Length: 443
Image (tube, rainbow, N blue to C red):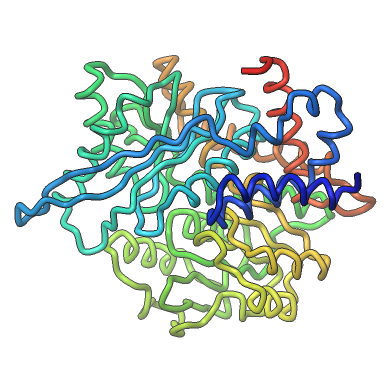
């Protein structure tokens, strides 16, 4: 049977079982398209039905979250934890608080997390969780009460050797502190059941910066693979959160020119490159829940896209499916040569095809943005050893992990003088997960 026929049969099965979960289908198709023939050619993988097993998470835990707002009115939200696979370690992945959170979104993120975590070389399984709670317009006390109520429902299902959540969209170090406090009160012990904690109570240095810094370390490895470096490169970045601003910060420090940052209302542009002061200003506005219009030394254009600029490199760092086909065409027309994903699955399937047809180097999020979970894994080790590493030690370890990820991906994806980063990442991660699944038998 041909690859296309195998893929159609597999995806028909997945879609029949999970009707309406479009984000999940998109993520599964991207991986299965690269690895389905590898599974069929490997008799142990085929006998174990690895891909069929990976089409289903180990479990999806859903619960009601009841809390009171400042007016004393009862509020009801939905919460979930997708424990996707613990084949190579405890479930590991962030918590997201956003109105768009749904089982489909969390399953796609959990599925991707399994492969991302496998690439780090650390003993981490994959999971994801969150709630449809919207923190916008809520007071600090309301967000704290919500976090405490959410953790009351989640706490029985997590722990340092079972499932270790971290932060994600709208869940930063402040929220992790409230969540951890609630977990500690439930468990009656101090254990490393969450990562992204503050340094004063078991957190790791540079955890906040890790995803953005790691993205730039991976990008440097991509450039070096093709005989180039960051000096003077024009970079468009989308988003204004931790990943976007810390990627911008590190890129500027390395001699690149970061031309854009953005939010849902528009794009901030500086033709000669954003300064560190402007990046810090954007970070402060994000923390205050405000837009980024009026930044110093930059122009803001409502409804504009970061991909309208003439750049060498694009780093989508906002959210899933943020770049559609028309945006991808403009990016190609504007001369970009590399796309490296700071967000998870930020390109639609059509956009991904346009980037591939144009011959751009394209690093998927499971490889390029793995720095955050890598430092979370290092935080878990520090908690277990009761020894905390210095900022330099963690940064050096992060660089080594991102270079190791690049080496794995390049080995599997090298095609002559170029690397197919998407295929390389999917195959390298799949082999590791599949080896673990087949070794443990039919369970």
